Image 1 (cartoon, rainbow, N blue to C red):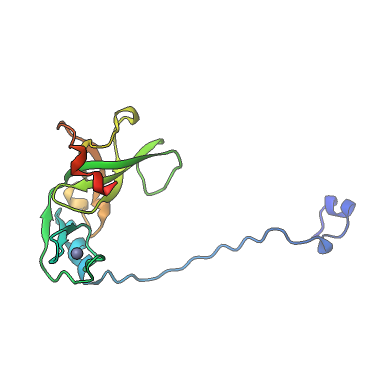
Image 2: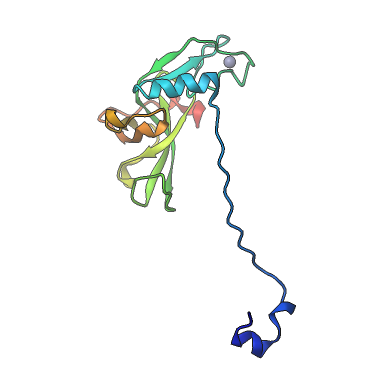
Amino acid sequence: MSSRANDENGDEANEPVTLLRTPISLDYDYSAGQSASLFLRAIAEGKLLGQRCPVDGRVYFPSRGACPQHGVTFGDEVVELPDKGTIVTFSIVRVPAESIPLELPYVTVNVLLDGADTILMHVLDAKLEDVHMGMRVQAVWKPKAEWTTSTGNIIYFQPIDEPDADYDSYKEHI
Ligand SMILES: [Zn+2]
Protein backbone atom coordinates (compact mmCIF):
# COMPACT_ATOMS: atom_id res chain seq x y z
CA MET A 1 0.00 0.00 0.00
CA SER A 2 2.20 2.84 1.22
CA SER A 3 5.83 2.92 0.22
CA ARG A 4 8.53 4.22 2.46
CA ALA A 5 8.58 7.41 0.39
CA ASN A 6 4.85 7.88 0.99
CA ASP A 7 5.31 7.27 4.73
CA GLU A 8 7.82 10.09 4.75
CA ASN A 9 5.67 12.40 2.63
CA GLY A 10 2.21 11.68 4.03
CA ASP A 11 -0.69 9.30 3.29
CA GLU A 12 -0.91 8.53 -0.46
CA ALA A 13 -4.72 8.40 -0.15
CA ASN A 14 -4.59 12.18 0.17
CA GLU A 15 -2.49 12.60 -2.96
CA PRO A 16 -4.32 13.60 -6.16
CA VAL A 17 -4.54 10.89 -8.84
CA THR A 18 -2.51 12.16 -11.77
CA LEU A 19 -2.31 9.04 -13.96
CA LEU A 20 -4.64 6.11 -14.54
CA ARG A 21 -3.60 3.32 -16.93
CA THR A 22 -6.61 1.60 -18.54
CA PRO A 23 -5.58 -0.83 -21.30
CA ILE A 24 -8.64 -1.51 -23.48
CA SER A 25 -9.28 -3.03 -26.90
CA LEU A 26 -12.17 -3.49 -29.28
CA ASP A 27 -12.66 -6.34 -31.76
CA TYR A 28 -15.08 -5.74 -34.59
CA ASP A 29 -15.95 -7.09 -38.03
CA TYR A 30 -15.72 -4.69 -40.94
CA SER A 31 -18.00 -5.14 -43.94
CA ALA A 32 -16.10 -3.87 -46.98
CA GLY A 33 -19.20 -3.19 -49.07
CA GLN A 34 -19.75 -3.71 -52.80
CA SER A 35 -17.12 -1.42 -54.24
CA ALA A 36 -14.30 -2.15 -51.80
CA SER A 37 -15.05 -5.88 -52.19
CA LEU A 38 -14.48 -5.59 -55.95
CA PHE A 39 -11.16 -3.88 -55.26
CA LEU A 40 -10.04 -6.34 -52.58
CA ARG A 41 -10.98 -9.48 -54.56
CA ALA A 42 -9.03 -8.12 -57.51
CA ILE A 43 -5.92 -7.29 -55.52
CA ALA A 44 -5.96 -10.90 -54.24
CA GLU A 45 -5.29 -11.77 -57.91
CA GLY A 46 -2.68 -9.07 -58.39
CA LYS A 47 -5.01 -6.68 -60.21
CA LEU A 48 -5.49 -3.02 -59.37
CA LEU A 49 -9.05 -1.96 -60.16
CA GLY A 50 -10.34 1.59 -60.23
CA GLN A 51 -13.72 2.95 -61.27
CA ARG A 52 -14.60 5.71 -63.72
CA CYS A 53 -16.93 8.59 -62.98
CA PRO A 54 -19.65 8.57 -65.67
CA VAL A 55 -19.86 12.39 -65.55
CA ASP A 56 -16.30 13.49 -66.24
CA GLY A 57 -14.45 10.20 -66.81
CA ARG A 58 -12.02 10.59 -63.93
CA VAL A 59 -10.72 7.27 -62.61
CA TYR A 60 -10.89 6.78 -58.86
CA PHE A 61 -8.46 4.37 -57.22
CA PRO A 62 -9.22 2.88 -54.83
CA SER A 63 -12.89 3.53 -55.50
CA ARG A 64 -15.52 4.13 -52.83
CA GLY A 65 -18.27 3.29 -55.31
CA ALA A 66 -19.47 6.83 -55.90
CA CYS A 67 -18.02 10.11 -57.10
CA PRO A 68 -17.56 12.54 -54.20
CA GLN A 69 -17.69 15.46 -56.63
CA HIS A 70 -20.79 14.58 -58.66
CA GLY A 71 -22.65 12.30 -56.24
CA VAL A 72 -23.23 9.53 -58.79
CA THR A 73 -22.60 5.81 -58.24
CA PHE A 74 -20.10 3.99 -60.44
CA GLY A 75 -21.96 0.74 -60.98
CA ASP A 76 -20.03 -2.38 -61.97
CA GLU A 77 -17.66 -0.92 -64.57
CA VAL A 78 -14.03 -1.24 -63.53
CA VAL A 79 -10.76 0.06 -64.93
CA GLU A 80 -7.68 -2.12 -64.53
CA LEU A 81 -4.63 -0.03 -63.75
CA PRO A 82 -0.93 -0.85 -64.07
CA ASP A 83 1.21 -1.03 -60.93
CA LYS A 84 3.41 1.80 -62.22
CA GLY A 85 3.00 5.45 -61.45
CA THR A 86 4.53 8.80 -60.54
CA ILE A 87 5.46 10.23 -57.15
CA VAL A 88 3.32 13.31 -56.59
CA THR A 89 4.52 14.14 -53.08
CA PHE A 90 6.52 12.37 -50.39
CA SER A 91 7.47 12.51 -46.71
CA ILE A 92 10.48 11.15 -44.84
CA VAL A 93 9.38 9.17 -41.78
CA ARG A 94 11.57 8.81 -38.69
CA VAL A 95 9.00 7.18 -36.37
CA PRO A 96 8.69 3.36 -36.40
CA ALA A 97 5.44 1.52 -37.23
CA GLU A 98 4.86 -2.22 -36.79
CA SER A 99 3.18 -2.60 -40.18
CA ILE A 100 6.04 -1.03 -42.17
CA PRO A 101 8.88 -3.46 -42.95
CA LEU A 102 11.40 -0.76 -43.88
CA GLU A 103 14.23 0.52 -41.75
CA LEU A 104 14.09 4.09 -40.46
CA PRO A 105 14.13 6.60 -41.92
CA TYR A 106 11.87 5.55 -44.79
CA VAL A 107 9.77 7.40 -47.33
CA THR A 108 6.00 7.55 -47.68
CA VAL A 109 4.78 8.55 -51.10
CA ASN A 110 1.61 9.68 -52.78
CA VAL A 111 1.63 7.76 -56.06
CA LEU A 112 -0.49 8.64 -59.08
CA LEU A 113 -0.88 5.34 -60.89
CA ASP A 114 -0.82 5.61 -64.67
CA GLY A 115 -4.40 6.11 -65.81
CA ALA A 116 -5.72 7.04 -62.35
CA ASP A 117 -6.94 10.46 -61.25
CA THR A 118 -6.59 9.93 -57.50
CA ILE A 119 -3.49 9.22 -55.49
CA LEU A 120 -2.45 6.11 -53.58
CA MET A 121 -0.49 6.42 -50.34
CA HIS A 122 2.28 3.86 -49.90
CA VAL A 123 5.92 3.52 -48.94
CA LEU A 124 8.99 3.70 -51.14
CA ASP A 125 12.20 1.72 -50.95
CA ALA A 126 14.87 4.11 -52.20
CA LYS A 127 17.77 6.23 -51.04
CA LEU A 128 16.44 9.36 -49.35
CA GLU A 129 18.61 11.64 -51.45
CA ASP A 130 17.20 10.18 -54.67
CA VAL A 131 13.50 10.69 -53.91
CA HIS A 132 11.79 13.53 -55.76
CA MET A 133 8.47 14.62 -57.21
CA GLY A 134 7.84 13.24 -60.67
CA MET A 135 9.94 10.11 -60.00
CA ARG A 136 8.64 7.02 -61.78
CA VAL A 137 7.97 4.03 -59.52
CA GLN A 138 6.53 0.53 -59.61
CA ALA A 139 4.98 -1.75 -57.00
CA VAL A 140 6.94 -4.61 -55.47
CA TRP A 141 4.55 -7.42 -54.64
CA LYS A 142 4.74 -10.19 -52.08
CA PRO A 143 5.19 -13.70 -53.51
CA LYS A 144 1.95 -14.74 -55.23
CA ALA A 145 1.36 -17.58 -52.74
CA GLU A 146 1.04 -14.95 -49.99
CA TRP A 147 -1.53 -12.73 -51.74
CA THR A 148 -4.75 -12.08 -49.84
CA THR A 149 -7.59 -9.57 -50.11
CA SER A 150 -5.29 -6.88 -48.76
CA THR A 151 -3.39 -3.86 -50.02
CA GLY A 152 -0.52 -5.41 -48.05
CA ASN A 153 0.09 -7.59 -51.14
CA ILE A 154 2.18 -4.66 -52.30
CA ILE A 155 5.17 -4.45 -49.97
CA TYR A 156 6.38 -1.08 -51.24
CA PHE A 157 7.10 0.89 -54.39
CA GLN A 158 10.56 1.26 -55.86
CA PRO A 159 12.08 3.57 -58.48
CA ILE A 160 12.21 2.39 -62.10
CA ASP A 161 14.50 3.47 -64.90
CA GLU A 162 12.16 5.87 -66.69
CA PRO A 163 12.42 9.65 -67.23
CA ASP A 164 10.62 11.82 -64.69
CA ALA A 165 7.00 12.65 -65.44
CA ASP A 166 6.21 16.19 -66.61
CA TYR A 167 5.10 18.42 -63.74
CA ASP A 168 1.91 19.28 -65.65
CA SER A 169 0.88 15.61 -65.64
CA TYR A 170 0.54 15.46 -61.84
CA LYS A 171 0.42 19.05 -60.54
CA GLU A 172 -3.32 18.98 -59.85
CA HIS A 173 -2.79 16.12 -57.38
CA ILE A 174 -0.25 17.87 -55.13
ZN1 LIG B 1 -17.44 12.58 -60.84
